[in-house]
Amino acid sequence: MEDAVTLSATLRRASPLTRHRALVILFAIRGLAKKGDMTLSLTSITTALEFSMAGRPVRFLFATGGHASVLRSHDRGGTWRIAYRVKGTSNDHMEGVPPSDKMVTMEDIARLLPSSESAKGQKWHLGTDCSATELKTQLSHVTALDSMVAVCGSNAFLAVSVDRGMSFLCVKEEDIHSCMKDEPSASCESWQIEGVAFLSEQLLMFYSKNSLFSIELIHHHHKQKQKQQQQQFGVVAFGRVRLVKRFAVPVGCLKTFSQNGKFMCELFVSTKGDLHYSSDGGQSFLTFPHKIGTIRAIEPLDIVLRRREVPQLPSVLLTHMQSAATEDTKSKKTGKYIYRAISRHDSVEEKDNGEQNMVNSGNWALTGAFPYCSENVHYRVFLVGGIGTSILPYDYTALFFIAATLNDSTGRIELLGSLAESVDYIPYIRSGAAEPTSIALCRRPGSKGCVFARSNASGVSLSSDMGRSWTTPTQAYTVAVVAMDGGEFVCCNRRNVVSNIHGGSREVYSIPADLRVPYLTDAAVML
Image (cartoon, rainbow, N blue to C red; front, side, top):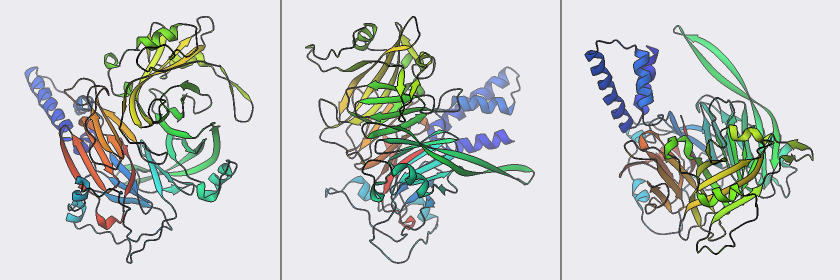
């Protein structure tokens, strides 16, 4: 019975395409069982349907917005409720600051649409008088891992939920201030947590300016028996805040991705001209130089693509990685600029406290850092979005290759290199450090490879040919685009509009005015 309930809940939150695909396979299994006079267990049927789904259905969609609010949707952005609101902030209605242009867009029209929440008569009495006072705390980022959610923002605000966003616990300001007070030119007004990501169930990473921090998460579980079923509720406490690494320049991006068979995620931190990678929780880093400015968003292709679909390592990088020369070769007149950078790796890394850390780099190639190999050159491919290449200062997206070669005698990494291909600029758009840019990718059933999505102030555009060409941007002032199952994307607009893109069609929803959230700032999915 438990399997049936789980399957039913999964199908309810899945995309229409995923549900259709599951039903077709269910009828096929039924016909095969009748023809072969077989009997399949419910567990076998649910397992087969689970692996047939076009992606893992999303449990919840979270968004952060004005009035220091966290919103949660259980139906892919169709309806919303307030999951959390920072205490001490105003709940009064305050109009969001509209963009400077005077164009009437689809988002303006969509704001007039009645929301399904309002149709159901769910009213939220969160204030009485109007106020235009500026809020003390602004939430800017949200992230999720398993059943955990974390949000961060101004005034060193950081809060975590371990029960799917039902309740949040804030980190004490003094705990974060004690680490940030030593930052250069730090003041109470400049204590901004600019990004957050879960490294594991026990560790949360966040950054401010050029410093990367971690905080321990201590879980306490309370069990309660009800109706002969055992329910488990989680409570979290915080350990100490630790400075992981201080970089020479400000951090542009912080991302973590799960590793197969490991409890700790792999960590990516980008700075101008470099991408830093760690698979041991920030104890040691591999630093890949590159020529594409500051990376603001990164997604590994191997998470979605099949092995045979992953692009091969370009020969322009392969030949230079195989040679012992480490000098930059872009001075050769090729008629086309090559976004390539190669450096020699030093296996001795100096920590921030002056101590030296021996990096056992020989094991890096055996981990998820380099899952592919071509002629003894280990590599990996990403979709990245950023700003400020050496050619043009505009926003861009690109296929980004990182590569490494090993010393045959010692087994340690000798050379680290990178190459950007299919670099596509977004004309006349240059996002600031605090302005939202995002990318996403997902597999669309029936198509080869996967579909890319990118968003910034100009809107959302898609690519179905591995980033070589993109559609014209639509839905200006999009703050985040996230991938869903069934080849769908959900786009959250600053103007309180949420749209679901599937194929050539779109479904547009508006955030209910009763929720008193004047604008959105970020979005994340919980799988």
